[in-house]
Amino acid sequence: MKKLGGSVFRTVRGYQLINQQKNELTPAMEDYLEMAYRLCQEKGYTRVGKISEKLHVKPASASKMLSRLRELDYLEYDTYESIRLTSKGEELGEYLMKRHQIVEDFLQLIGSTNSLLETELVEHSLSPETVSKLSRLVEFFESDRESKKKFEAYREKYEESEKRHS
Image (tube, rainbow, N blue to C red; front, side):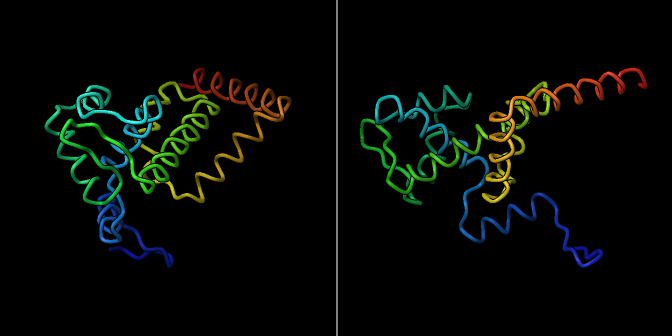
């Protein structure tokens, strides 16, 4: 742990370990819970095979992760592999899905050319406070079309200038 100018710096893994000690979910666990939430919105339940298909992982990997989420009381599933979220899982799943959308909307707003990939990489490291502030910024630009047009024009001008100088 390095200290520079009063700040404590850690690696990404270091912050992940701190979160695990606080009994928070890992980024992978969040991805599984978010997908389970998305899929449960359609029918009220989902299955291991559907989650593994959507996340492009092997069913055995999905089953292992879902078992961990079940142990933490985020979901339950029966002998027929029907997965249902607990109230705790519903609440966090809804937040994870909203967080994902807010981050993706923000990245699209600033002109990201690969917003889905970047969202997946960034979303797990943001605090709820930062997500809320990003949401306000996106809402501002969505409600104030003139400001959004000005920002887009500025962004395009800046990007053109970068292209000329590279």
